[in-house]
Amino acid sequence: MKKIFIIFLCLNSILGFGLSPSSLFKDANQAYQKGDFQKAANLYEQIVRDQGVSSKELHFNLGNTYFRLSDYPSAVLNYERALKGDPSDEDVLTNLQITKSKLEDKIEPMPELFYKRWFKAITKAFSTDSWAWLFVIFFMGSAAFWILFIHGKSSGQKKAGFYGGIFSLAIAVFLFVTAYTSWSNNYISQRAVVFAGSISVKSAPVASGNGLFIIHAGATVKITDELGEWVRIRLDDGKEGWVILGDLEVI
Image (cartoon, rainbow, N blue to C red; front, side):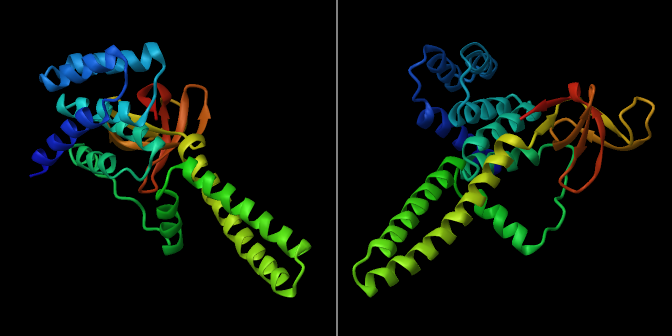
């Protein structure tokens, strides 16, 4: 059943999202539909490399193509890049979850306090741009209410302006924090995918450091520190250690 579902989503991505006028994109779509997945992957990568294009649709298609090639680390990388544009996209999230089920490492996230889970879910409900626009709307609304409070001619207008300004400003502050958190998670916090077959995560940024645990290709990690060619990583289950940056591909 999962195989049927992933195939449906792959075809949907190619037929539904193939809106670019680029001849390379059209050629890649045609190659995918003909089952020439390696050619499709090469053409999609050429668009990214030579034309500097990076979009949710392109990376989603790339993820689907690499999935069909059983190149699961590359599929994870591109699904994660697609989510940077829209972290709430259900198709991308579903395909990413199915792809991760194929990986050797099954990393279970650490339990989080309920309010952290709640806020994280909120930040992923919309894109960063959407949260930013909502902030602007409520901030401007707050300004309009305060103008009404200052220049209102009746006590009713002043009361409406005061309480409306307080309410709108409180919502605007919440939206600002949410937009900033979404932006930070998507564009500031560095995350990466393991591309080496297997890595011994070290206790220190030296080859002679003690091996703490092993991670395999396709695992997603967060980079928390850098020292020369070494980076400190943290897994979703809380494990930390040092690896060589060249073994990773930054999302």
